[in-house]
Image (cartoon, rainbow, N blue to C red; front, side, top):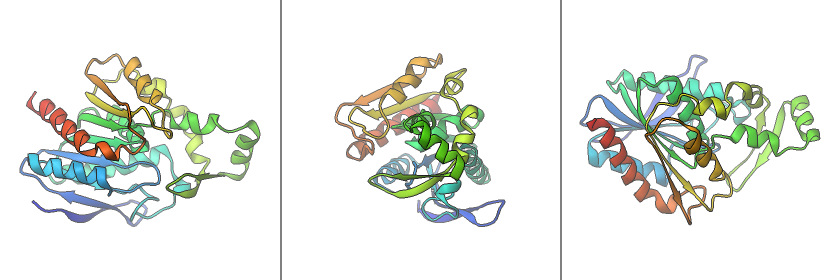
Length: 254
């Protein structure tokens, strides 16, 4: 098996940049979905890729628009745009015979992965979430003062800065807030899920994962809290990759 750089054409022109490793099992692939301001690479993605290689599964990871090597700007980020990108990748993988997907989403990628799985249950075998930001729209809006909210609506831009990036996000992200409410996500959820969240996470609180685990009615949902885990969970990458592999293997075996 080998890993190669690939691209998925966008309807508006350009292409999403991706990494793809084929496997010996034709119908299944694990798709890594990165977080806000991140990219398809990194230590966690590499640990998952190695686990897939060990099990003979295909592995894929792509940069969302405005991230990594894909075209676009973070300022144009929208939730529907994230799902559109995932739909293009799903179609690209299906064209290579991978009609069953195991999704692994980190932070904002967990948010996008969850909504994609909810809307496409037939093609998603199961989801693994790492520090999933299920409530990131509400948290981003509610942490602002009324004056800051008004300014964001008026200018259409909000400056954000953390230890990894400095950028602007557009008001289009908030315009879709009513379409992506956490209460609707957990309602009628019906996909097996395994969640990992660090209790020392100072970016996305573990309450996001606790909200999901407590409010879904579907029984095949497990949350693993990691006492010393930070937001990135890099120190636990090998354990997470191994647990994800075992999780998907159980689902594939029926």
